Image (tube, rainbow, N blue to C red):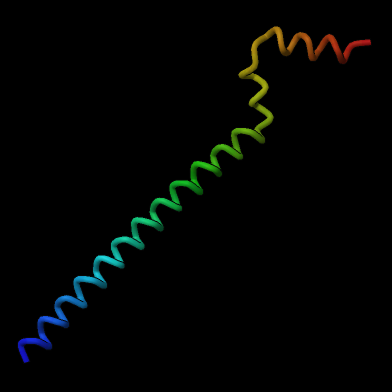
Length: 66
């Protein structure tokens, strides 16, 4: 009987560690996804051109003028 109890306790501890590991993996993947989402939004934003130096904007404007 004692042996069965020890096995059950050991099995439970192993499962708890597996659950904790999977939760950490999920959290890490969520963080990575969030970071990629922000990067995608930042790179597709029409406002990103405002971060460029004035000389770059001027050269683009000059290229567009006849």
